[in-house]
Length: 161
Image 1 (cartoon, rainbow, N blue to C red):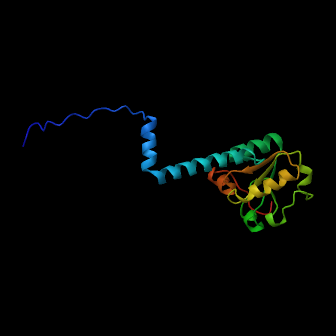
Image 2: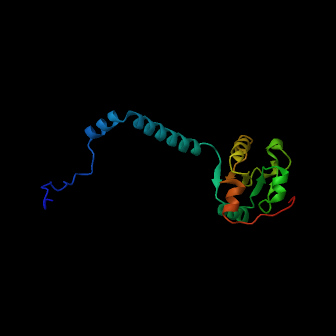
Image 3: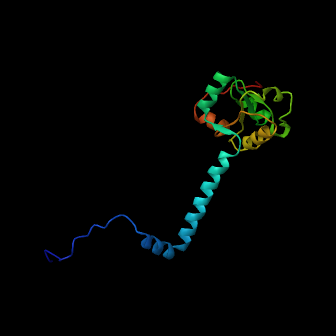
């Protein structure tokens, strides 16, 4: 057993990468490079489309503040049975199959903030686009839907509303 193996101590490299090293890495890892470019384009596209979709998403606490401050109309798009099992206090149930922006329930609320709620938040986005086309100015979607509301540990009301 030798007391010293005469190995050189590790040298500390400069952590910065120059352009030639980056090009060499990209050439050696073409698949990873393509995946990185595709993910970057997808993220940029998603963020740009979010800016131009015409409605905003609200967190549950923001919904409560909007209802208290501006008397927002909360529209629950879930089925009647789900609505009666538990819904946001003060919300109105309009099933997505019967959703019409020109209905007598919604038409008077064109100037009010309208918040759409569904089970997870995905169905409400389609309804929000329809409201924007119909001339509603303040359209919101509850982020995460009724599930997000429950995760925030906020109260639900049972019954038909």
